[in-house]
Length: 284
Ligand code: NAP
Image 1 (spheres, rainbow, N blue to C red):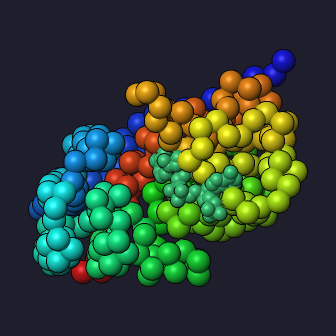
Image 2: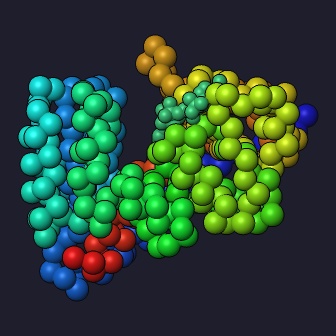
């Protein structure tokens, strides 16, 4: 029985971070300061705390300066917006990341929209999402950018291939589909209302799965020899599971990302990449 090659996101991420470190050093030499990333965490969400800690660690690794802001669970919307305004105006801050979810989800839209598009290193602002749609240079969402790098690392071409994206969220599914289209794939987007889902996914040369359902994609939903990228992160009893049933799908795919150790590390690396890009853009 064939076994897939595992796409090692940790290794790829390490290689890219080495290149980013060189760029960050060059910036520091030229402009006399480190590139800065501000990370805002509101509340006590345990998973968010881990993500923020990992982002701060990545900044140290790449040679960026991190500014961490911890606001209490009870922070009012205006308090968060004021902090964003301050960070927008701060010349030492090149990128701003608002760790989601906010304790009060109803704040999210307004808070994200307040981040200056030039500092929107998550790529969530409508200006950056719009530029992605138009094919303009932009700060693209980190996870989808990481997905593209992982696919490219296989050496297989994307152009002309049928890519199926399972999930249509604004932060993963839609931007991933746009980036695949930019890379000349023929793209199908599936979601919870899609009929005959297996028929579609099993036609995919490249299958990107981002639905948040533990091991949802089984072997019979995958084309033999497909590249399978598993974005899912589902925590159960302290263990992390992907959206793809790795053991069985890896018998059929040609390449597959593991969870953990696939898309996750690349997301943070693309955040570092976007922060350097924002700093170098000289837009401010
Ligand atoms: P989301 O906002 O909840 O979106 C889920 C998408 O999946 C929706 O478009 C939904 O369709 C679709 N969906 C749900 N159940 C489905 C089903 N049974 N069949 C087909 N489609 C289905 O999630 P997200 O933010 O995109 O995240 C997706 C997963 O990726 C989560 O596990 C998340 O933790 C993970 N993630 C990982 C990273 C990373 O760095 N590794 C980053 C971000 C997210 P509808 O639109 O019709 O509801």
